[in-house]
Image (cartoon, rainbow, N blue to C red; front, top):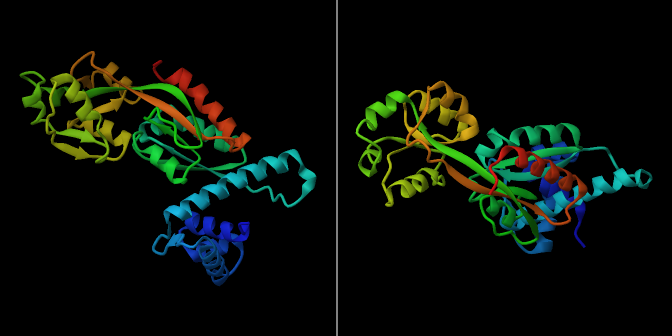
Length: 298
């Protein structure tokens, strides 16, 4: 049987980033936190915390933190249904999810804000490329994720959300400077592009579909959808923008499609831990409702 005082200490260390802050959050001494972590590591037979600034969880530590998140969600639900059982302190519980930056900046941000304001949860949002958010589910670090993969992670239910539409766009001056002679493999190899990070393959995917070949693209790295738009408006580069973010600029003519009529639709899926709690189920319903009105039908 696991010791939940020790599990709470582990979760606090990972959430707060240090033994000292975890001790303050749990109203105990740092030595008590250290003792609980040590006892838990001895029980499971492996390290659970990578000591540093901040402290990080090992793979086993992430799985135990995931377990704690589930237990707390279930306990919150139980106390709401049976208030006379006692021990309920009314504290909010963590709801860890992983999403893409583009989803967060467009259709999903309002869903998270509304649910976090109305439900007894603390939203913990991890941002990663939609092709990699599933890794957070498989590691046990989150309970749900918006993914680009149609393959469900173990222990998760999966639902198709629809597709996020992207358009290749740039400023009119950028188009005159780099694409006056047309958009082809040669001109794309010279024109700076905008990417979110090294995992971002949307630009290459669009170019492969357009040209029928791989093109080595010069790249600016900007890990922010809003910064993408600002950079494109300034003529810094062309990029694949979430259509919802650039629609006003396309309408105003301050941005134009690099090749008109060539959007890229990226299918998205919602994966959530099976039988986690009604709190997670409620959030899942809100996500699915928003997707139906915001995303392209697959």
